[in-house]
Image (cartoon, rainbow over all chains, first blue to last red; front, side, top):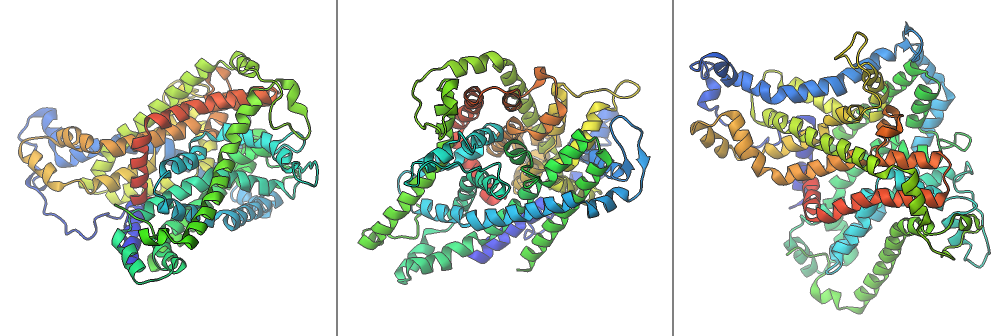
Length: 336
Length: 293
């Protein structure tokens, strides 16, 4: 499969996610008779006839899911929107305050700080970890033996529930009694006590390390799945041409991986903006708020300070940010 | 047979061998770093509490024992939490599929005037972060509008954990993309033979999509099993803790690290067991994720 086809395949998959028809190239198939005639079910008397009508049948398929989405997704979203225009704590009456919550969010230094932290987190994790899974996938693709073992090892962090994984990291990164400092103390420089989680300059980096530990293997597996679709002939031709290995990676492998890279980049930004468990359990947003993220800040606002209207406004802003980012990203994908 | 960038002849050249050996060493190091936290979890769990406070830490325990596991089992009603987790994850995963599969089939193959609207709304659900929904869902669950005058308080019950997990826009769209390719002839001929729409769906569509349903079910199960944010908010009565929530509360209540690590190790086991038994299916699932990112 050539890279262009790969691109358009991914685009089609995106359209599938966002509602376009997946088999766009296929001509519409003429309607079958029972879809055409509204009276098709009318010959049956009573309820049987009612439920056999095409329009009604379609509803029986869609309605349960739509009802569930209404109650557990759309209604809460709407409620959140309403709350964001109110001053509301759990114990007091709600007051309408118009745009106050939003105006407050714009000038809240804490919110701006969470934004800075999210950008720093994203930049750090991309700088340190963007290419590792690509390299790992390229390596795994060359393996003739042991690929299964490699996959199992790198799948493990993804499979492990976040809570025990993050707890063990908190213990490893402990400044006084942690294993990381113990390993570093083995060096010729003697014992070290690096406060990985309690130094504002290091805490964010530690978070990034834990995040990369959890995601690198999984991303490599996704890249590897994309690489497997390349027909052997493509590589054979490249080999017969006598192109060097580096050239082949640049001319064959990377173009094939590019759509997956774009997708994972988008996912990374989305995940970063929403990160909660890791931060809540590793640093709790500290030290000195140096790792506060929007989700942990919202959690504190709602359940510690019962400042629910404000937290809801932050939630709406987060949703809008994700929406805008995804739309911009998809548009640039479509254009390229 | 898929092959890599390197041909058989090239693989024998000394330069390539050297480079490959170097790459193998780097990857092996990364593998060790990946596994190290698990090792440290176990090495901490088997040592007595007195050994926890050496600085720098002793990497290899001086004395071994399972007392931390015994303590963890005493402080954690493990069987109870395990059952809570199995119940919540199992019902969420099955419910997700039961709701998403017919809807995906309907959206992929049936006519409905409002289809674009539904698709748009469902796509919006795909992007709504859990953070945005947590507070409104908390309020909704506190006064669920189906009973009593001021609603029905579902917080601190399995229902609070299960219900919001029933909807998965990801499962729905993945299934829709998959079922969109379902051979039209099968549907048409079954219909001409007098099969109803639901008959086609139950007798042909579901059995033929068994593998993707298994994979999505697994993803749903793992997601619910690992969930932390929503259970943290929705449940405060220890009787309804899920396993991972129970483990986190153990640390919060000031237990020493060897007990916390023993409990963590125990909470990782079910995921591992599930992975071992369903490895083949998951491997196929990764193929699918290549198609439907």
